[in-house]
Image (cartoon, rainbow, N blue to C red):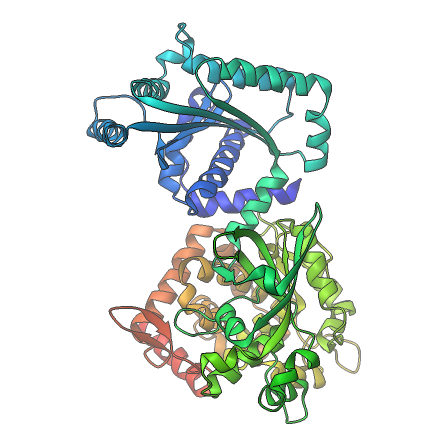
Length: 619
């Protein structure tokens, strides 16, 4: 399951770049044990995020054990507060930890404590090893002497356990086991076997006999954890409450997904797609098409815009509506709202953008906007493959664009072959030449034909200003001229195809870096890509014409070496971003309260030239 390994490695590199393998003792140099520890951090991170809704690398490290007779992580929820278990010692940190525990316990007449133990299985899941980890949990709480009682983390667990037992209490136990390399169906077949069901029931009885009022044992596949990771990594982490759900939506549910079909009004759509600062939010990440602008008066988008003013009462009859996918949901029975999280508009990008522009251009009251409705479908699923299928199917009714037809050319096939190597260790990118060609690969690792277009013209076209909102006209012009992935009359390609490869891999990592570290500068991603190339060759922007025909090795090597090293790449991008924030006042507004990109400031060739000049002065 290479894709699982790839995603885990990327996640670990991002959040735990400096793992201390010395906790593995004699196994610290073993790659098998090192990989197992990375799996441990991954599973513990997902469990931590499920409770805390954030990724705190230091606290996640504190719940990891390295290996404790099969136990890879442990924590307790004490009166709704997350508590990890440090090693017992004489340090001030441990003293402060004890003081906090005593304070929580003293504040309440009754104590609720749920002890959670985690195992991440990178190897085959076996019945004897399952029993072993349950026996280890049993020995921690059992008063009979055990080899585990000398462990300093276990001594901390027992200290808290004994303190809780001094007062009226409710104790629960949750044992969580993740079989990394098992898919859901295979795992379900395994644990439904009579031997497994009998063993699970027996372990629950034994553990409950200690003192626990409730014992839960959950065995899940790595696939389920990856689905949770997809939600964590989704660019949009906002919650949005769909109000009065049952009055406006019908629900269709099966074992694959939950689907709601109904309507929202323009005021709600505008809230859905905008940030707190009333800027357009990144809720179209999973959509096949970007906003193509309005075009001429007879274009489809222009007609939609006009119909908002002239056909508002029947707008919902004239347009297909919007399809939204979300990773998770929560129905609030008290107010009848459905809260969706990590959502994306996968069909209706054009309509949504037009609504955003129309609301911005017209001074209508919120009450008026609530009178104009639009059909909406909301699909809740954590299944990455199903979301990819939904996205593709939802867009099949649209006309196939010329740029999508480019993907069947010999040039596109040749570029695809260039991606058959790892860019970083354990991290491979895929050129998805055909729609849904790699459904098992996460979106962050896939490069589309549109990405080739944007990265190429940002760099070798020295035209990042052409790749802003509504770049459809520029795209059509380049395709009409047969410039993009074009061939000469003799059949020879116009450009060195490596220009597309090297610019697209740099763009992929740059965009992910900005989303993670500088999301407020994301609008300038095409401009920063050009600056990245200029940082490798200061004359790059003046020599693109010969470079298009044959990319010099210093460009190939320079960009490749940067991309291969996460630390070097991040350092270079941080330097570019910080330089931009401090010096690009023509693009960026900087105040004590916040830093943001000035709207439409980066749309012109003059702005690009000014940026390059200032960059060369300051870099």
